[in-house]
Image (cartoon, rainbow, N blue to C red; front, side, top):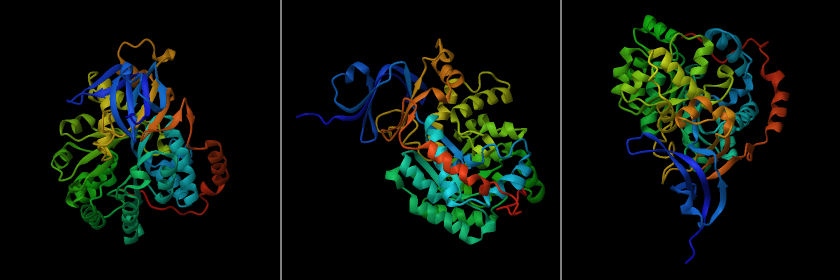
Length: 450
């Protein structure tokens, strides 16, 4: 009886693996066998020499990593890349971004999502958590381009009850979409734009429908200080008293998390995670960053993110990984924290847990979905290799990713995108720009009043 050929075999690479204590290690001259979108085995290259496969990739000189996960972004905002520079947070929102976003059409969102997905695939990102508007368009792009995504339709209380209802309808309609590559969340914007009654109603809906919540909270220290002065509680304490912390919740940024917030996060009734996007914090000149070490100490996973490209200017999670490690060393005054291996853990298993997919992706192991990137370390900037983890975090770049695979499907091969046409997207987006960036109407979708 002839064995059914594997769908894909990757041979000759070094594979990042996790041991039973989740410590990072590397297996050299290895092979990865993929069948039905799942990693069937990680073995020695010699063991697969005679194994039949629909496709084989010779990956000598390359490292196989779990696909990167962008744990918090607003993908369509690539259309606003560079439009609001060198501004304080309130002016950035009120004077530029929220007036422009009032012009958004579904076509703008679709085009932005296409460009964003192309950028992320080329940077080794296989999954992203998106929090934005007109998310039906984003879901359609995800289905077409082959990425994995965790999607939520954002809403403010100023939209009335229909905003929350639309977020729920989107989450229920698209949950499990794109052959299981789409998961969904309820997406209230933030405690300063969504009132307590709406947050409490959201928590009830999340529990009723077994949905997670994706929300901005304690984004910066100013938000926390204003909340304390006006209401006597921090944004995290608002999440606790409204029941949001009794759901599975992904909190974006959290650079305003205080020591007094840690017990609420540690004792939350749901699974709590935080997404950190350090480049934007540096650009806005925020005085604090996500307290990764304190969160680590209470068992809260911190996933890596970029936020939207309107503030970050890129969707490069590789850069977020390096910046997170460097900023943690600086803010703690301890060069032993965050180590390169710890940074890789944040980029893999912790990021997978942050988006609720900790048992599905985040490692290259039997039974996990085959979301894999191959990284070329033959360039002069990555040689010689004394410490492979350090080389990956601090020397390699996203442009060293040669191949990107999701669910066993190759989305980029040898730097060539296979599922998206970038020139046509750029052309169409260029035609939309005059209408999109017009602020002469004087409208904005919301006020930044924390």
